[in-house]
Amino acid sequence: MIEEIRIRDLGVIEEATVSLHPGLTVLTGETGAGKTMLVSSIELLLGSRADAALVRTGAREAAIDAVLEVADPELARAADDAGASVEDGELTVSRVLRSTGRSRAYAGGRTVPVGTLGEITQGLVALHGQADQWRLRQSAQHREVLDAYGGDPVREATTAFAKARRAWVDARRELDELTTSEQARAQELDALTYQLEQVDAVDPHPGEDLELRAESERLAHADDLRLGSARAHAALADGELPERPDTLALLATAEQSLGPLVDADPGLGPLRDRLVELRALVADVAADLSSYSASIEVDPARLDAVHTRRAALTELTRRYGGDVDAVLARRDRSRARVLELQQADDRLGGMAEQVESAAAEVARRAAHLTAARTAAAERLGARVQEELRRLGMPQAVVEVSVTPTTGDGPDSVLAADLEPGDRVVVGAHGVDVVEIRLSANPGSPARPVTQAASGGELSRIMLALEVAVADAGASVPTFVFDEVDAGVGGKAGIDVGARLQALARNAQVLVVTHLAQVAAHADRHLVVRKSTDGEVTSSDVSEVSGEDRLAELARMMGGAGTSAGLRHAEELLDACRRPAG
Picture 1: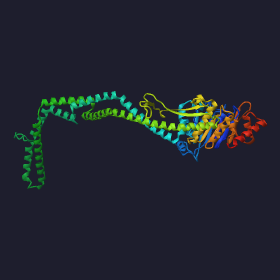
Picture 2 (picture 1 turned 90 degrees about the vertical axis):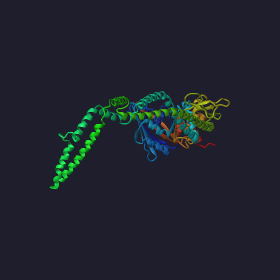
Picture 3 (picture 1 turned 180 degrees about the vertical axis):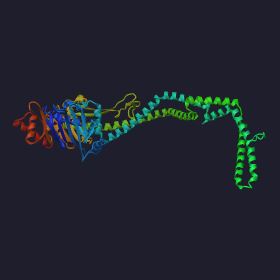
Picture 4 (picture 1 turned 30 degrees about the horizontal axis):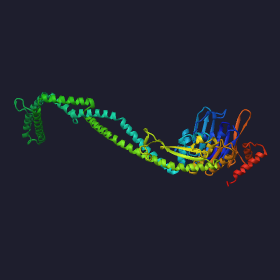
């Protein structure tokens, strides 16, 4: 609910503070006085586009501040999620327009994007003007009205449909991606298969390139290795040249020299023992050198085989990795990728089945949604028709049609509840075209409301729809009507006022009107008056009551300043206050 609006330098309004209360409040005033500025200020708080022309002439900026009562916990959470704090059930929102064309928005004392401001306030205020008659030309608007009226059954069916549609869209997208990439997958599979065939043909094992390099070095230097090891063995344990004792012979001589002396000096015992150990160690080394020398073979054939094998491994590492281990790692990755690609082909068939199943679920959920809307449409048509009888259209017959859209195309599915083979076109909100139709006179066929109703009748239909939706509990706390009585007069005006008064029993209603028959039903009456000093025109807003209110009603009926006009105004006011009999 709007508790207060403060306006500064907007249009002809220099400064005005409007306090609002529950019930029905009307705003009246002479043409050009600035009634629409109040509506414009609310539109700006609802996130409408800023227009620098709205800034008062000579002012640098215009500002609109409002204090909103937020009683709904969900709306309070939504405001909090947007970064706007609700304190003691109140939310302060502001919009500042600069004469340069730029604007700023605030919510809860924090700067917010204009779109965010609109998201917060649109859950609190519904604004209706003459432009709303054009909304009735759009089937989407008819559907929104019906869905709001339909309550939980339609809401639950809509949620279930939306979930099924998301699953269907996701499955189709994945299938499209799999189908589109099928050729690329085939090419990648061929390339990977060729790589694996090359690696498997060589069949390397881990570390083989290092082993072969070592063997190649050994085979290439076989003569040097054999001769060198033989000379080393001879130096240690030749035994064939008495004139040149080998190392073992020298060590034996040294050991024998110390043997007889140990008894004379036991301190030589450890030295002799060490010589014994050295002789044993040299004997082991000599034996190993003999074995090594005997194992060295000069094998040109093996050397050629090693060179050939190393060349094959080098070709693999040049193409697929820095060494054999890297080649083998790439081979393992390629095998895993081949398996993945092969499984993708299998998944392609499975995805096609999944898409078909998801399409059937979408069709089933869409049929449920159509059924829920159809049931709600019957109730809404009867309810609006009842309201129109109270609004001076007793002969009107209202129909709300719900028609599934049939047709072929990528966004169509086999219908779940139509003739076999029929397909319905799936949209974000279902498959239905919703249309509100009117037969204004007995015997005339029902036609779309914009074709069958005059401007005044459209205004009454809009009001009847709003009252019906509000009675269904799908309403916002505050309604603002900008000349919803356009094209209406006489008895019909009284009826419109009475229904606005009925709507105000459960909501805050603010009406900008030019009809005294509507204004007389108000709980509070605000008047916009303009004044000028000869150079600048300005307007302010004030509440009228008592004689002042009678004078304003008389002015609205063309009897300003006359006793007959005042008397007529008083009679009208009494008639509107009298309970309906």
